[in-house]
Length: 119
Image (cartoon, rainbow, N blue to C red; front, side, top):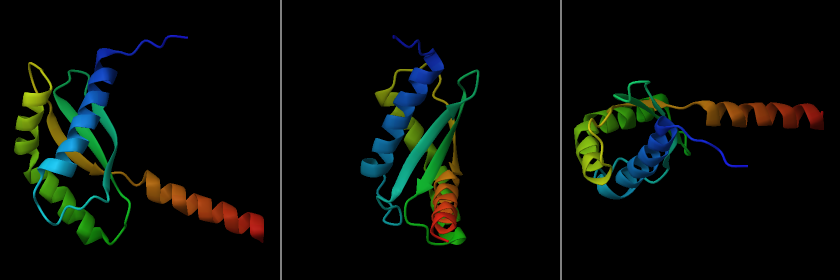
């Protein structure tokens, strides 16, 4: 069965791929390591704003997460300029980086279920 994807869904996927590549290979800040992943990209209905959900595979503390999110937010202009070169859009969306806690919540629920089954 062929799935029909809307333009916004296709754009979300391409933004996800490009932003992940930019963060991994183009940002030169030593505080940003490879244990950061983009879990999801959500675009507004007019395609002018994008929420980038970031997952940290190595949870250190809340200050570390806030520091990385502020670094990414300060690099928004640089990331948008690289997106403009790689994805041909009339307007490159403004980026907002958000910590995605679903990974941590999933681990917590998994531990609760494991403890419940073993006890």
